[in-house]
Amino acid sequence: MMSSRIREYATALRGLVRLRVGRRGRGIVTAAATILVSTVMLAAAPGVSAATTYQGRVVATVNVRSAPTTFASDVGTLRAGATVTLLCKAFGPLVGGNYVWYKLGTGRWVTARYVANVGTAPRFCGNGNEYDGRALVDLNVRSGPNTANAVVSSVRAGGFLPLVCKVDSQSVGGNSRWYQLTSDGPGAWVAARYVTNVGSAPPYC
Image (cartoon, rainbow, N blue to C red; front, side, top):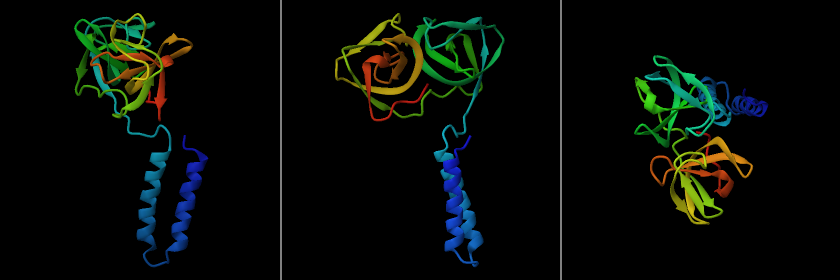
C-alpha cells in the first residue's frame, strides 16, 4: 500500500504545476507532471516493482526446504509432474552435480536438480548489485547457509566480503541471517553474525 507521505507529495507536485503554469500550455505540462509524479510514486513506494515469475516442472519427487541447503528444515514435498512458480535462483550446496537452487513462489527452496525449466530460466536472486561487508572475525565461507555445509574457503578478520543477498536459515549466535557472496564461485555463504555491513545491507534472495 502506498504511504500517505507519498500521496501528499504527489498532490503537492500537481498543485505546484497548476499554480506556476497559465491556461496556455497547461495541458501539456500537466500531462508531463503526471508522468513525473507516477515515476516518483513507483520509485518511492516500497515493494513496487514489475516482479517476474518463471515456471518449472518437477521431474522427480523433491523435498521443499526453508533455505537453499539440504540441512534446512524440510517444509514439504513436490511430486514428479507438478508445475511450480519460480522467483529466482541462487548457488548453494551441490546436489546430484547441480549447484543451483530455486526460490519458489511460496518463498521456499528446492534444488534445481529435480526441476526442469518451462521456458526461460529464472534470474539470479538479488537486485544485480553487490554490497560491501567486512568480516568481524576469521570467517569460514560455506557451500550453503548452514554450519553443516562444507567449508569452501575462509576470510581473515577485517577482510572484504562482496554480498549479493541474504536468507534466513540456521541461527548462529542469535542471528539467523546468512549472506551469499560472489567471490568464491558456486555456493559461497557466510553467517551474518560475523559480518558488518559497510553501507546498505543486501536485499533478501
